[in-house]
Image 1 (cartoon, rainbow, N blue to C red):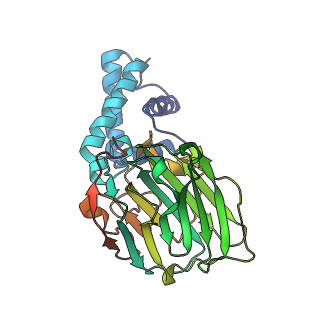
Image 2: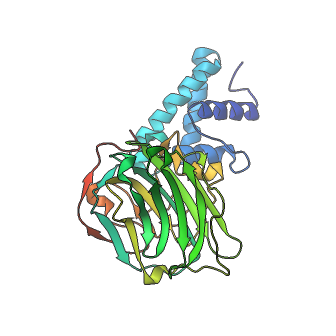
Image 3: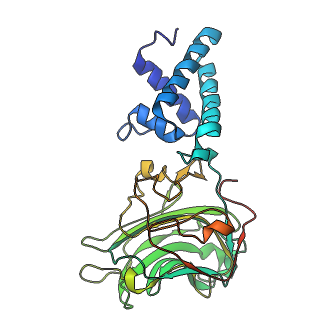
Length: 329
């Protein structure tokens, strides 16, 4: 078999199979294979195809078209491209992207005084780790919140096995809005977990909550009539709020108050997590959807406190330190 004379469709199928063997997900309904390759590698398309053409030629000449050698060569190509012009250049990232973990003690939090417009939606992606034990989470503690607007919270009703993650949104005047269910027994001590959530209070209620590839959307818990407009402009937006919060660590906190993200779409989740690791979201968080989120916190303890999104500066209370681990480990 000669790869240079094989029909293009066959070559495409073999290249895609090899990349999927490296942990990348291909969705033919959303991507042509050139778009797919360029996306996962964060690489200019022309250079990418030149590299693959050269690789295929070498495989055919040296190994007689062995598929196993093709897969090995593609794996080496992935490593080479990522090392030279991939994640380090703000591209697709994937497993080659290295993020940081930032430690908040029980008294530290970030907040701002209402710099974004009111809206009916909120979507967020963030990595979180509890360096202590779940027994430290007595009652509930908000980890992304806006005064009366409780966005995500943890609860422990007396035993570690009952700890769960949930989110609920109020309308800013202590009247219930609606909430999504929890992911029972998904909390664990001392490991990084990736949460992706969205809520929409306009019209028919929609919400989505995922922990990695685990669906925790749950059911409607409570509601109130009419559209819900969340008064972001009148309230602080706070990262790590609540007397019961305890020590917690964050990485790559991405929040938009203007777009509803459907996390049930595996291709969408793959923009934020690949192979159980974070994906590079870009310097200002705009890589996944070509728009800048209102809030984006990334980097080490020095740079994390700077909001790289469009929603304005935050004030730090307390101090931040680098965590001993990161989701990329």
